[in-house]
Amino acid sequence: MSSVLPHPTASSTAKAAATDKPIVNYKPAIFGLAGVLLIMVAYRIYQQIFAFSAGLDSTAPEFDTYWMNLLKGELVLLVCSWAGLWSYLWFTRDRNLTALKPREEMRRYFRLVMFLLVYAFCVYFTGSFFGEEDASWHQTVVRDTSFTPSHIILFYGTVPLYILFGVGSFIYAMTRLPRFAERISLPFAIAVAGPFLILPNLGYNEFGHAFWLMEEYFSAPLHWGFVVLGWSVLALGGVLLQIAQHIYELMGRMEKESAAA
Amino acid sequence: MSAQLQEGSVTTIYGKRWSVEMADLSRTLDRLAVAIIFIAITAAFHLHYVLTVGDWDFWVDWKDRQYWVTLAPIILIFFPAAVQNVLWSNFRLPIGGTLCVAALTIGVWISRTFGFELWSYFPLSLVWPATMIAGGLILDAVLLLTGNWFFTAVIGGMAFGLVFYPVNWPIMAPYRLPMEIMNSLVSVGDYIGYAYTRTATPEYLRFIERGTLRTFGGHSAVVSAFFSGFVCILTYMVWWWIGGALSRVVTIPNRLKFAMGMPEEKVVRAEQQA
Image (cartoon, chains in turn purple, yellow):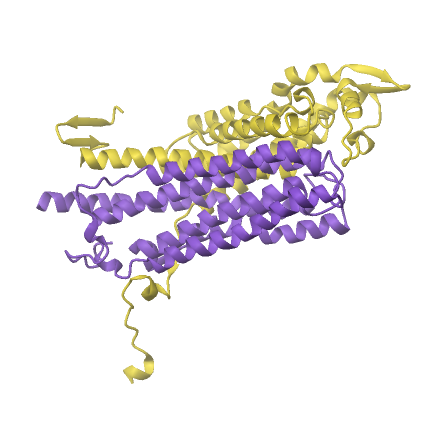
């Protein structure tokens, strides 16, 4: 990196990055993880209370009250949170990355890693916790709508949340870290775009369940699109390797700078 | 930690000298990366597992001596093979198999408890997940001893398929006891499946079983395990390669980098040169 980019002593955005400020700040990650956990626990309690009492018949008025209203709220939240976080990250981007100091760059790398941690935590609730729970509902209860108590939480609650953090982490890396801005990381793009496409693939799933297969077999080929897109999470390994390589180089630069000082 | 020596403000890690601050950063990255990898594997492996062979894993009456024994190990070896490649090739860590099945086991037990038992009210005795820890340990042991992906595929892959049924047998055995219900010969597992109605899923027996003595295991389970082991060898090879491909650091030029705070490269066009 140092052979490619000049590193002037003054940085436009990193002026505030005093050397005494700690490089690793766990607070955003702790808030992120705790916030996600809180939302997921709330969703699960809501299901426990209203799924069997108000979620068995989609034509019933109470279904509209407790489930369709929740869905509408989620859709509004989805649009607002995506637009809010992604546009915030874009408009507050570093406009002079070539002037970034190594210490601030290192700080941003750790912030990115914690972004990815929150992203992975959200993906867990989709792929594992609520994903399998969806089977326990649909194999037990007759499906009379696409918007069932398990789907409203799984596809319109947890999936948009991990998309928020996945795409957010990608934008963060592209707008704040020179190596990611210089060249697009394919494993990063795959690790974010693959799980993202689970949401559009839902259209195919619902079409299939509406016209071909009302019963629920989890292993039915209709679901294999989700499987293939889920494999793309493995590309997070490539992203972490890339980050580790960058951090290793950065550590060398920081050591040289402190030795020179 | 034997590779790390600390003298004052300098730490030596694998022969390279770092300041204590840099060494701390390195360890912090390790810890965060381990957490991300474990959570991501749990999510992706679980999604892959439930949407391919989940039905066999959910219900005790689906756990037959034919398709469950054959399909579950074939599907289960995908992620261990891929993750073994990443961890062995880059870090010489022979833990990919055990890591994957441990992550999956934790994921399925959490969802089986909070989803199937506490939400849909199926007893855990009907929805317990299969165990696959032994297969993961064997895969890692073969990789550690041979240090070679090909031998791990051939020996470890076959063993992975073969051990699945025997290691699950102690849990499975009570559900294979024969009983007569309405003049039909069924297993205890089948009867539980009948008794706890799954309104939106027809009974598995209607498709698979024919009510003969083969229903209770016998040589057909062994044949299924060997076939499964054979296919595991092939799928291991494919997924070893996929793991390497997905974790490769590949980048392409960013044509919009000027909008992201990077200087635009000056491209001299052919007509300008002329």
